[in-house]
Image (cartoon, rainbow, N blue to C red):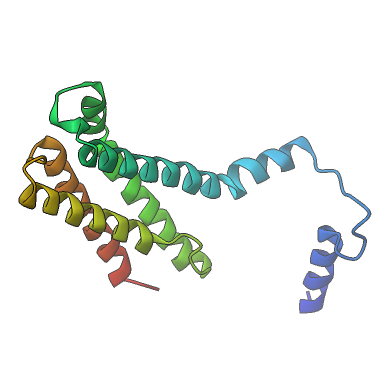
Length: 162
């Protein structure tokens, strides 16, 4: 088949020439679009939301002084540490594989996220070193572990760029 026949088929299917004419999609076409074409974007959204909320929760608990006592929030933060690292790793793997396979540029900025973890690490460590109000506790230890882990995950993805 000649190349312009493919182009003609695409134009006919897309409805570019007749924008007022809407083509109805079958139930199976809608399911395919929702679950297969948009699934990665939905996964990016939920993983991104979880990772940023967790980052801000950990930072807030330590810098507000709420993590110095054993309470429910510190237990929740401690128990979500490993799933959090898994989510960050899956997010990075999906991002890098999409760039390699699809050749599309990244729409998600991992650099901002890594920078926020680094800033949290610097501020919380400085607070523990130079202030009597902050101590080295389990939450600061968690911040150090997670900041270094996120940095390592990012560097691993950045070293092997497509």
